Length: 172
Image 1: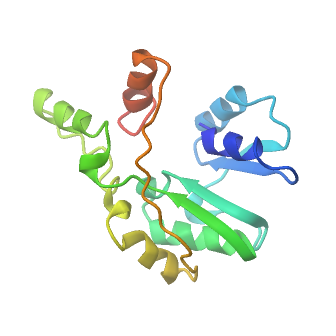
Image 2: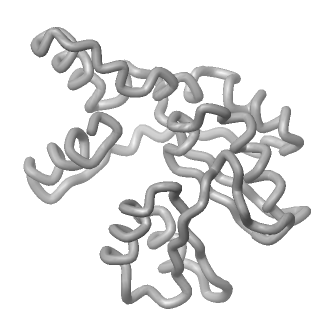
């Protein structure tokens, strides 16, 4: 919780960063993890119905958010609404299932535990070619660039990797 907001707050030289999540527990955890970063706040809010004012932000980011939204297009519309004219938005989604290192865990859970997890049906949908750009254009945003990152996720040890993938990630 709060990784993207903390990374951004550590890089900006002026202004403030506000990280939001609809889960009070996630907001509290983010506050606990990043108490010492100047210009960083965390608040409860809902991506599908942001309470922030129109045109309030120069930059809006969304890291692995859309897959949890019932109305992802509506969430993107709210993100576009709170973005000032000429502002920028960065949206991060998972890529193709076969290229995500932890995705075999889903198959293991479903086959060995005889349990259909239905972890998150839309988890990999937004990374399919053309899907996200089309949605962004539907909410009035111009797509400037699309990048596929092949950067490996790094963890300090095996326990941290397991925790990140299973205990604290989308499989939780």
